[in-house]
Image (tube, rainbow, N blue to C red; front, side, top):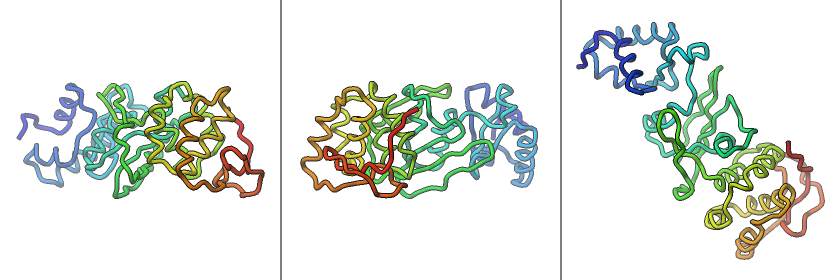
Length: 262
């Protein structure tokens, strides 16, 4: 048992030593009080705005600087949360793009890629954490990003762009804007290594977008080289629009929408 006679004192200690989160199991193992009494104490702290429940059994500590938001930035606890959930992870998509200077990342929504099995997204009136699943884990394309709480896993610029084209039906204009902004951050050699585990349709769309948004498509060679070893069929530029439109002869992309970057 610890030396603190209340959960509030214990949490203040955690905050003082740089902790931003704690778990129910941690509280249960640290105090000899009944579960009912402990839950009542946690409820009072939540009501006071000193802690917030992120997922069942996982809490974050809210210091005075963030009290008006009633939560803390996801960066400060995402590593602890994923460890609590027992999942591989990396921060990706629009959130990752923001780390590399792209100015159009989502502010309220946070994007995380995990391994199988899938887990439910966390939807709260103050924030949303979207979870996506990755079949082939791209270990060599995940980097460490420094935050005020330590380091978190983030997709490289190359992986960020590939994932944006792989997942869901994100706006092609929004994706093109990110591709344009990350162009100088991307490496042709790194992209070449990533393409072997990328979808053919993703490579086609990326080639087309790069032609449209970059003055010089310095990645054309590696993209074309990878496509030579595959069966390539026409694909729509926008997944969510009609498949009607001219087909670009170089990338076999059906131009069913116009690209307009912000």
